[in-house]
Length: 295
Image (tube, rainbow, N blue to C red; front, top):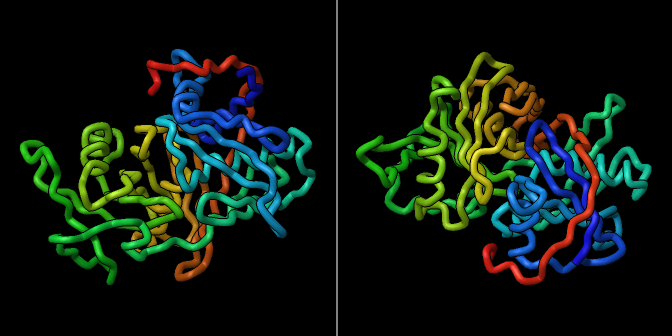
């Protein structure tokens, strides 16, 4: 199969973007994995697909596959690239676009400076919605919010780590660290993801609070590993910091890939994510039907 694609990045979080507004490619999980592979394919953290509107009041369907080939619920950095893509490809001239994800409707706002603001909707703190199964765990309270101590698999390294739990349409666990540069992200990230308390996996954020309006953040993403930036992870970290009484309502999040600005007024209000979206290059690729090394 011969398909065209656009390579994009938002704060270093990189994507292959596919236009299926006219024709569905019907790719297999193995073909998504091949596209995302940095040696055999194009290389990306996620594959984003633009599909036609599913109904009235919605402009497009926004479909996300992780590098492991699995379809997932949400990607904030990808949403910004999605908005830039549909405008640059002439699929819309609107400054505000509404898209349907697996479980949410997102509103994407084009800014005069070329950045994109995404209305990420309200955070969800219902543990069953994350999902998070706290059987056998006892939370501690900080600023009247539950912080959950998790026993890790490798107890020789560390006995427990405390996390705040929140869903941004996808699951997040956020832990506070003194210094993100020395935090054992690559070790603890997969250990936390493997815990039975997270039946659908989890994105693990390591947050260093610099002051009430600035944090540093690294995220070990579900299905992708550590990425240069994670939009939903930035939102989850800021929401957690606000609920813990550590942050104000608008925060700059410093990631390895760039700066994201997150605003949240609390309660049931939407989280707003603003950041860059950049086209890297366009191309075409032949996707094999038989991919035994990617099954």
